[in-house]
Image 1 (cartoon, rainbow, N blue to C red):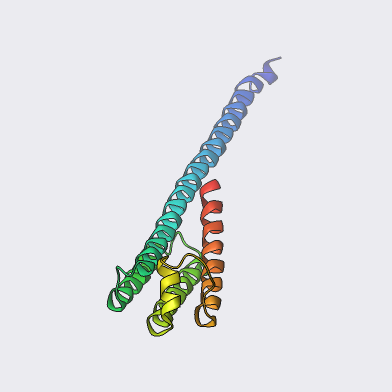
Image 2 (tube, rainbow, N blue to C red):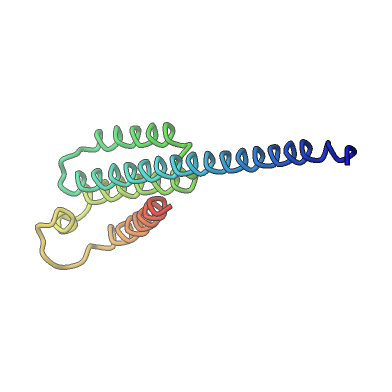
Length: 159
């Protein structure tokens, strides 16, 4: 039996090494999950802030509490926001935000230059009717872009 004296310490060493390896694996996995959760939370916050910023700008343009110079300033601010938060935003989301701003600016310009009936519809003083062809397609596009951004924000908030 003296030849088997090494078996106990060897099995103890193997067991200790195995338990240490499993513990390290679990710790790394839990750490990765925590980092992923923090990233997802921050991404959802950034997406929500982006959407709110765009919607507030749309409301300001509809109520005419913002002029064209301020619209340009807001577009620059949006670009700054997108640059500062590009870690959490996908390229396509930045593209959608820029398109939203572009369409909103185009609506602002067309309504400013267009028929007064369009202006009454956009600010909500005309109760019924349809927009003229000068703006209708822009509102459809604005709705599509906003819907895409809302869907992406909701998805980010669920993760």
